[in-house]
Length: 96
Image (cartoon, rainbow, N blue to C red; front, side, top):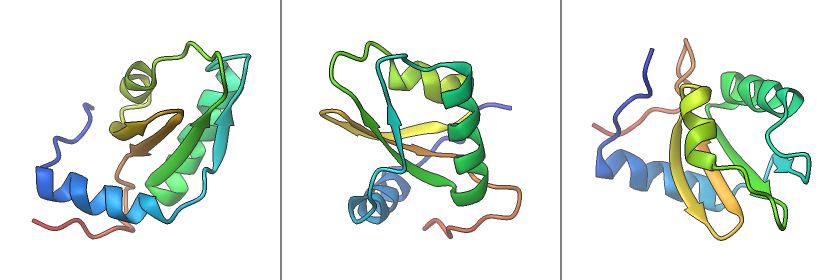
């Protein structure tokens, strides 16, 4: 299964929803460990849209992490990344 291709309207919608969110997870100096990947995977399954804070000097690539988790990297600003993956029963209703 590949990440869903999102339209610019859908990306803008997800960015606006993520703007008010606090980071749910922090990617620390250990990098994208198996434990972190599992936690992010579970968070995406529960919430669909997850904001992650990247600690200083972390060399993990959010785009690669998104691909590994079959998610979409919606946005990356500075040390904050937003991931989206639709759930089996969608929570967010994306605009068409």
